[in-house]
Image (cartoon, rainbow, N blue to C red; front, top):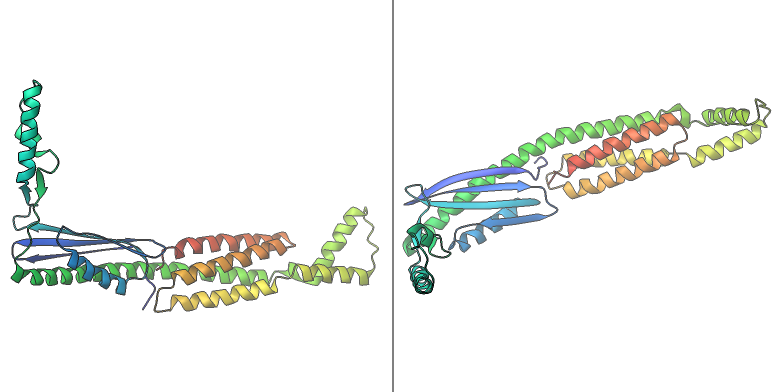
Length: 295
């Protein structure tokens, strides 16, 4: 199983007797799993079953699950609420007796709150379970389509993340091979700095110079940071092959990558090494942006 994205879309359609419907599932990034269902009234049992199924398949993401049901003619069915209509007409008569107003049209009466409502007739008892089963099966199809879309986007992310990890590995190797890290290079820099400050006099105690160079080399040593970066690269590569949601683990790893890159820059004693450290930080930022989409 490859990594999955948290972004995806799934749709399915179905029909049962006079009813037709479609499920629409949309998923975007989220810290956890947040399922929001929008179903017509009277289908609470369907929502309960579908919610449990989605929780067993999806690990993270904000997921909208919408069910739209129509009658066989393809148009939403409406009905007049007789009690609300009688009440509205009664109020209109009272108003007409006290205020000289133009008669209300049928359109304006139907537009009053509660008069016209969507028809949500429950199926007969013998057909109810069959309808629920058909809706659940249709939801499974939409969920499968959503999962497939998330996996396809996840494969695209895997390629991008693998490329960024290779860039990080290349920069780590570049920092490792940087000649400015050697004690000899540090000695040369000390000599140049002293010569600049002393007006060109370069008489130095070689032993003292060596000690100072070793001290600076120890303070500026980045070998531990380079070793940890390599270990993080290996761990990230393993996560790309994991058969489970790894987004949170990747998020932690990017924090560790960023910490080591910051330390490398702070210890740098040469412009070329600083340049490599800054390039490393830029790639780590790109990696962090990409893994925000991983489940």
